Image 1: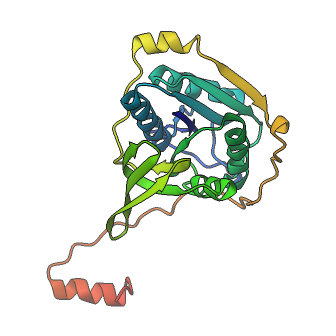
Image 2 (image 1 turned 120 degrees about the vertical axis):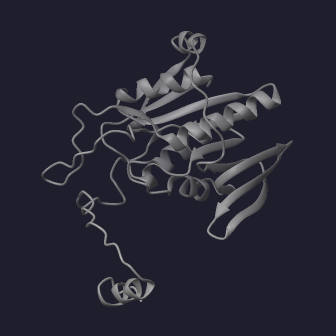
Length: 249
């Protein structure tokens, strides 16, 4: 089975993020970038599917500048077979990213696309769903378990009320939730092999997709600082504060 796994380069979640004074983005100087954690989980699941079936191919896709090469090489070291980097200087919104992925699905003809449910930089949680709509493929989002028997896929997904089981026939799209698996670390032999694996670069223009955003980002702001909490002595006092100060009841 051929599986496509989109990989996004994001700031390390442990990094202290500073917003630019003009609100146009974040200060990237001295910021470490890593693979989006949900994309790592998606890659791990694709590798496990390939290993369980004893054959197949896991192809990585990333969109961005050549800086994304570092994250793709790391993913290749984890076990992916080859990688495609769509070169663009600007950042694409989820709708444009889905258009790029749809073009590559047409070229690569995978049976399955596994994505992270969202990226930790903008938390949009849209690309997988938009890609499914563009391809008119079935989708299973927020997957916490994936079983594949032949062409039949069964996914347990996390929803507000608990767990939901849905099934579809390949080809299809799965987006990974946090509890789907524990991603592996790249081994030393894997790191050595990754240097020789194919990493193909494609200019965005070659795919016929515009970089013009469909969603305009107006301003980036830091979250408001949380005020110190209060200690109450009785439930009645808590209820009174929730009513008079917080106005929650």
